[in-house]
Amino acid sequence: MLPISALQMFPLSLPGMCFSPYPLPSCRKVTGTEPTQEEEELQRLEWGAGEAQQGATGDSDMAEEQTDPTYFIHMEDDIEICSRFLVGKCPQGSLCPRHHAMLPYTWQLKVASTGTWYTVGGWAQEALERLFCDPARTQVKCVHQGKKFTVDFTTMGVDHSPIFSRARRLSTSTSPSVPFHTSYRYYYEEKDSHWVEYGPNFVQSIEEGLREGFHDVLCSSFQFRYVLHLSKSYQENLQTATRRRMRARPLFRSPLEMMADLWTLRSAGSCCAAPTPNPPPYPKIWLMDNVSPLPAFDPVPLRCEDGEFPRVYRCFHKTMRETEYVVLEISRIQNYFQWEKYARKRDHMARSCSEAERASLERHLFHGTDHSLVEAICKQNFDARVCGKHATSYGQGSYFSTNASYSHKYSSPNSSGQHFMFLAKVLVGRPALGKTALRRPPPLFPEDPASPLYDSCVSKTNRPDIFVVFDNDQSYPYFLIKYQKIPEVVAVD
Image 1 (spheres, rainbow, N blue to C red):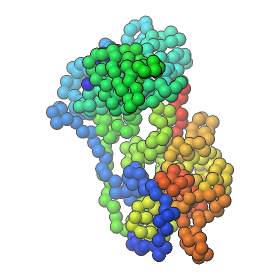
Image 2: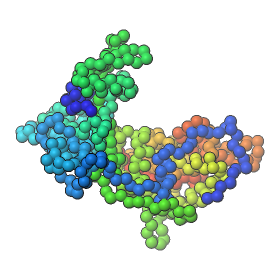
Image 3: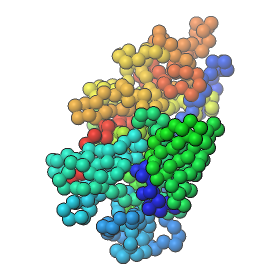
Image 4: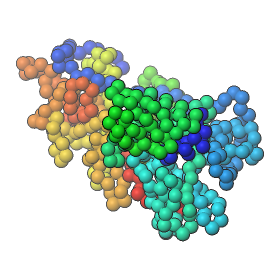
């Protein structure tokens, strides 16, 4: 456990199956196309085969769960947020010497005239935390009652404010033994504003030094020896005398990710039904209305507690930094006509696959698009016939990526700065390496004019990150993600 005082000394700011009669030539196989864990979970949830929502878990020696949260913040410094309260089992209640807060972190501003601490508004809490967890950020602009001011993340000073004099970030203990403990990451500046996270050996030395109250610690890499000046926030190479700045920032944890276990936030969970041997024509989790005729498409916003939400969220933020972008809404697109086409194609392709091939038949992949095209895609699906606006490097089809950060390049914002990206279901099947001139996948056996075709094209033969399909019944716009960049100015009202 790192005491608060030690961290402050370290001013780092802190169906049936049949096998294909055409075996794929081994020399032309594409490898590394297996779905990720999140993709597999989404596939199970499609038919209601997901796990029950998990409730909060606490230590066995804790008191019985509380029934009504009573929040309070002490005015004194160097006090931690009560981890037991966060899981609903603080035995001391209103007499607890620690803070009782809604989250494992709380941002406050000190009112200069009274010396009291003002807790910033709800969204501002998350926005400040996201920005602070980015080691490249040294300050943030805020606005309160129409007046702008700046918070320095290194000194926690406040500039240009007639009301506030400084800021503070309250947090839980760093001890791994307590729920929702604060976990820090440590960085050095490789070049201007490019921060590199220290490896495990350096982190161990840093944290031991902080626990013991050392001002300096010695560390070694394969080539060099360093002295890390913890109290002055820089490292020095003992051979070359090169100095680099150091910085510590907490690991960001989204309230959405914590909701299932955070007593102060979570909602009652619901159990998913077991999978059915004969699935219905539409996914079991779809919300169906007795409306005739059925609408062209029905966007259903997901709730934070829905099983799909955290899976889509994690897929998105694997490559889109939480300290830079925030998800505003995730919707499930229920297009009955397009789904029937897609499901028929999936069943047809599955019947010609081996068991191993079936495991990689369907992927959940990203597709970024202009905001003006979102409704058309929801209604009409992705259309390879209108490809070529952005990319045709691997064939003239519809492009999808395993990385949200790649698809973001093609997601132009609307006038409010909001971006839109699909997490689509894509039948990649047996892929081949793509080429610009391709208007359909190449044949499995080029010497045979009646040869079956590959199912899709890819960017590379090992762990491809881009997939191209040429028939629009091989994709379905399943989830629509609305997101934006975290604003440069945070309203703390």
